[in-house]
Amino acid sequence: MNVKQIIASTVAKHLNEGEIVNLGIGIPTLVTEYLPDDSSIYIHSENGILGVASVPEDQEPDFDLVNAGKIPVGINEGASFFDSADSFAMIRGGHVDVAVIGALEVDRKGRIANWSVPGKNVLGVGGAMDLVEGVGRVIIATTHTTKDGLPKIVEQANYPLTSQRSVDLIITELATFRVKEHQLILSELADGVTIKEVKRKTAAKFTIDLTESSKEISVS
Amino acid sequence: MKKLITKEQVIPLIQNGHTVMVGGFGLTGAPLTLIEMLGDSPVKDLTVISNNLGEPGKGLGKLLVQKKIKKAIGSFFTSNIDAVKASQAGELEVELLPQGTMAEAIRAGGAGVGAIYIKASVDTLLSEGKEMRVIDDTKYVFQEALKADVAIIKAYKCDTLGNLIYRKSARNFNPPMATAAKVVIAEVEEIVEVGQLTPDEIVTPHLYVNYVVLNRKEEA
Image (cartoon, rainbow over all chains, first blue to last red; front, side, top):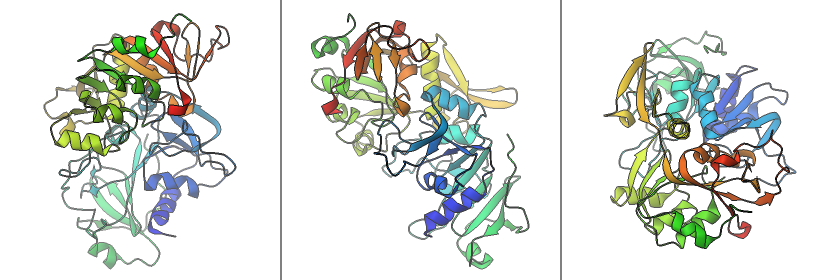
């Protein structure tokens, strides 16, 4: 598995059957590939779909049926379409159990920055703030370091924050952190990864508790 | 059909300085034929309310290159580098809103609601200088409703009265925008007789729709 696949498959393990899960753009969209065929998890897409699936192999991509990343998708049996106002009413109103989204940085309190990079060609917020404010459980799916090898988990974010809310889980190709009472707890290591390596590549304080069960209970 | 109009009839409806809502999530569900018509109009200084500004040279991206857009209100412009550059050069005024805030502000605009209080963007850079209010121990940001002089939207089919149905995730911002402008022009792929669309499937009732234009598929 490559880095993105490791992250997406780890995220899939942290989802509970029966949950409604919104997937953000990038690595999160890969999560569907790691759900069992008979899964009762339903994927919500901010642009107005409940029941997102992969495009069936024998079907042409339909550009009227795309995910949040504007990439053609398929749908499950029982899927529905709705407008953007309804879609965000679901998100804001607490009707979506989990959001899986990317991040540019995570600070020591588990708050994320994922929408603005001052000085770069970035001009958008999309649904990031709505999701972090409205959804029951927020899971961050991100590479542990930037392309230049710099830590993404830092004491204090350099980029503007998406919300004051601390997320619930941070999943990278190296490790999983839980966030409890605004503090990071290293709770899982990927195969072959040592605590030493995680410490070296993480620039924020964290505690270690590898005994917790890997499943989280939805708080919504 | 009474509401069906031509390009020559569309052009005078959208005037210099108008605020125009434009449906679509990226190019999905965007009224590409109507945008093309505006490209042939001398109109300028438009304020555009749309989730994105198309892609470089595509959809609203065309009107941007033609310098017809003075201000853009939306959630995500990173997908069009021309918009990012125009904003950095001070040639385009940009108001970024969280996607759900934007969708709900449009719904409010169409429903005769003056403003909304919403959680997304509380205590972030995007809410700086905006009014805040604590309701039931939760902080909310004040957002005025969004309304427009004209909305140009995309639907799948209409009947000869102007009732609209949509196709898959091409629905997105189109139904709420259909409610929030003084003049609503719907671009459709097919016009059917009244009675061919069942009352159960109609999403946008005809009272919202002033004019209809046929989508020219080859340009989509």
